[in-house]
Length: 204
Image 1 (cartoon, one colour):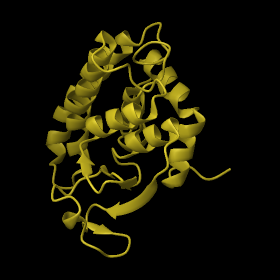
Image 2 (cartoon, one colour):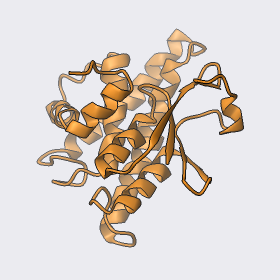
Image 3 (cartoon, rainbow, N blue to C red):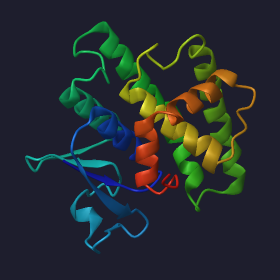
């Protein structure tokens, strides 16, 4: 398999999933602004959407959209990164993935655009902060979103928390559950490996 990614983008989520799953893969870096691959090829010929992540399967098929990609990875791995298909728990995982992608990702993403007017940023920030407050309550007494077990939803939420705290400088100091969760996920060896490979952490 081949993962098309941009350092620190939402493609970090499937990158973490691939490493947690122990599946073999190659990384292809994408310049999202120029829509170019490292070798100069046109990324839009790979994905006309112009977005990462893209997972190229060994069959030649391409899969896009992060929440779908991470479930595919989990199902290929069989390592408890997602509950079994058709189980009640699997639908709860789907609920979390949809919440993260529609309520967090879609509110945080616009804040990175140089075209977004400064007076529009508080609107998106306030919306995102409301979602984080919900998560703060939801994580009470839990190690991870699904309880004690790390799943692919956690890699996705961690990526959004990285965006919020490390890049957008959100103050989540009044959300101790969320900050402890972020630290817990960050301490996972495979998470650190993904971040190191993307240049987000210095190699030890």
